[in-house]
Length: 225
Image 1: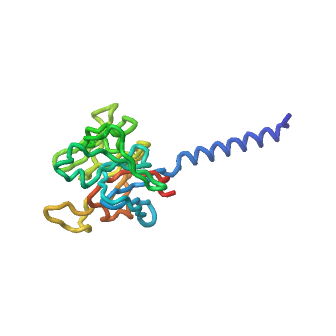
Image 2: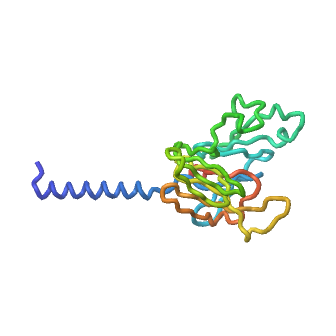
């Protein structure tokens, strides 16, 4: 049986341990990284340091990130662009470590991702169903609370790219003068993330003027290992 001083020490130790765990939970690192899938590679943009590029198999065009951030969905460029094969182009799944490509079952003839029923990160509703977004005239992005439609957040001239798989963040793309002015084509952009709890916005410095043609989303940190 523990004596009174020892019981007090045990209680104090458990309290400190619980507080430590609570602190860890509150400051838990984001297990996902902002990423962009271009025509030839997947680029991950850490909050600190430089961007990391992973080569992709040739002849594929990314159409979206999986909900868990561990894989990509793509289409074969030659089939997607061929008049004779438009209706027969199936979706492909790209996985990593090692990089491998496999056809998605029952996706033959699905040219449009919207019609494919493939679970992608890009959706109007956040994964937890608490928020939805829409775009007003002149490209103004607005978030609406699903529980209270009158409660809205205006995020300015931004383009919504993807919800993080855990619904903690929304990834945006913004245009900047420093990235240059282009006519008839869309110039490179920069990624930004919004914390849906604190509403703080953070520009991803490693993505500065690096986002061009392709799709953006969230990649699991497991992709790097």
